[in-house]
Length: 354
Image 1 (tube, rainbow, N blue to C red):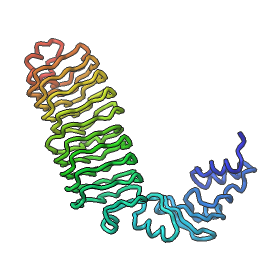
Image 2 (image 1 turned 30 degrees about the horizontal axis):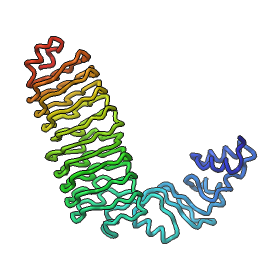
Image 3 (image 1 turned 180 degrees about the horizontal axis):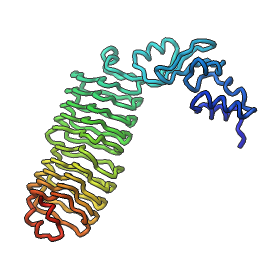
Image 4 (image 1 turned 120 degrees about the vertical axis):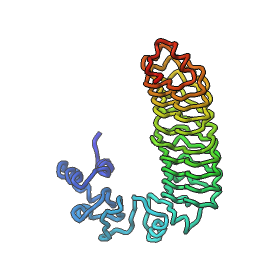
């Protein structure tokens, strides 16, 4: 396939700097004049590179610190970096275009609680401590909820997160004490630290397709979280995501291959749990201090038990130890209620009880 002027122009829009444009025209004679065909700048410009684009009519501003030129035939600007909604309204009056509009706390106080459809993200603390907020419609144009976004919205009872959202920032729903349930769509790939901390009425969370959960906790000090659904695409339930949670029910999908360190640490209301046969490893302190856990069935797929993984399980009276387990962590049954019975099993090292 032979590249013509149109094809090479489209390709050159993705060049990194002015040297790439210059090298193209020097290296291939028939593409000389390519730069002059552009009516917009495909890269940020400075005093040196500006002269190579003499026919610009629309000036693109990619970064906040880009040098801006108003010379020649330029009649419109396109702003790509994140701008506040108030700045967008100003630029719109000037005939300019903003591609990345953020609704900030200042915007909300000035223009109200209804999020305009042009907005792409909600800024940090946008609705922070908005006590009058009981519900909100998040338009599908929004791709990100900033940290502290709904922090302290004590009257917020329900919220629908659209499938356009890919990230929920840290402390986003912190102290939303009236929030009872939430469904996190499959589009969300990241949830920040303490996102649902102190949500004292939260009883149900569904996470459909999470790829990354912060290693710090996303829940903290709620009284009873009845049910959490874990996504099917995870390989490891990791970190301290649910540490110190009173969790009655936890659904582990068959895609999970490892229960990570501290996974169910101090889940004092966890009475039973089904470990699927996909699990090969139970991490350090995984079920440590699960004081209501009475029985557990370890599948033959498990080969490793982490340090103190069942330590202080004071109600655990029934547990099987399959022959597949070849690695026992220190203290993995320390002060476990079934410790006396387990000591009869000669396969279990004495270090497991210290």
